[in-house]
Image: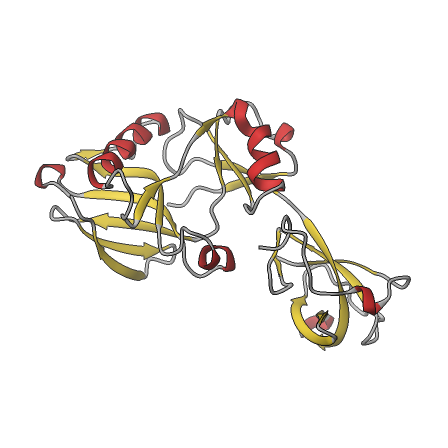
Length: 266
């Protein structure tokens, strides 16, 4: 059972009951089932077996375990960061012959930390690492860096006394980008998809397809400029979860160039 998110638009809006905060990792949500010999099978959120691995250093007395986390694969950030192929764990439901699912989060975190310290070499080299949990008081500092001035998508807020499956809160940053309209693709029920591109070395290349929030019957011609927003701007010029914002009639296509300042494109 994957917890549901409550989405907020600023750190200050998050209710006080969420007393813990973690950096939001952009990977594949997985449940890892570990047998008594350290053999691990990771299942995605649809319940399909994603991969099998071996946890070195798994001691016989540790028994079986069920660990929850993000496998850093399948997204631009996970492929370009130093966490690629790493299983970043943030919860534990069963370990050391004990069912932890009915315990509060703070208790599950303690057990998870014990597992990681038992099996992860202190000098690195393991494919599993624990997500760092911070007190709520650090939220503003984390939002300023590494979210807004770094390469992370947002923050996840949790409650230390919640049981597994209770809701979390999240705050995600929003970035905008102007694109040259390359085409309008009709969809069902009168909906439209806008194909957007950027100039790179003088050549126009497709970067994004935007359908969310596009008004039905929007009058737009190829060559015009439109603005889209999303939760992340990638090196390719694409946006994560793009949304149409507005047409930019006063914007020149020659201004839509694929480039970044190091803070928005990852």
